[in-house]
Image (cartoon, rainbow, N blue to C red; front, side, top):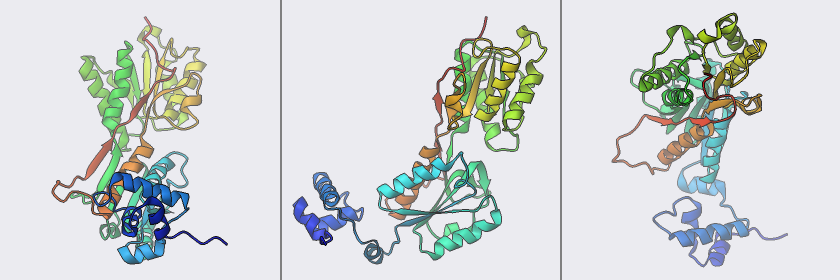
Length: 349
């Protein structure tokens, strides 16, 4: 049986000292070891299939190099698992392991999940939610470095850093895309009014109209829920039997499932997309937006980017690399991205 490679083997192959190997592979190379030497050390470690002993590292550094993640239902949700995927990408790249617990929307399980992870000596904690929402932060999250992803501290005096999508700019950019195509008669299916993301997207919608010097039709803004049937039923009421000159030329939807409902209603009424009606979605939902016919123009929620940004912030805090002179920030907003497809086009004459 071949002998397992040691740090000394890596040092000899890279032509550096054993202490340099330890610094680089323990994440403390920057500022202590030249960049070229760091690259040689990592290459040598890869060639020798060498990895530091995790238990020995924990004992030396007083760290477990484990990050606990609690989610309300992200693990079992088809929508927002990319947040955890992005977080895990960053954790692994920096030598950390993630452990995920899902409460399946049972808020009573939050505190016990946090305590379970703390009992296992995690170095930090992240809470992730499906959909933007306020969070009653479990008290245990203040005992170690912590971050919130896709949610925010509901207290009047928030204490925990959060990373969320920039919903206002997303709603504004989506509307600007339609306005740039000459649309002025635009209806908005705004989602469920009690959902925190919905009024923010409406705000962006209004800001885009104001910027274009155009008037919003208030009766064309409808908080109709989030599902396909909501989009279908409201669109039928809006368009069926209405003189074409009095119809909207575009409908902006607060998520892609509503956009499916709009497309089904348009098909029922014999309308061509986008010649007669442009449809704008929101989310860029996997296996939906890109496979619709025509494919859906939409705003992509930056889920993986939120996970990456949240984990980067958390690990910087865990490893003490956050500047002590900079004022602490409680919010990071990640921009949404416009995805152009075939469901939007010039306003009909």
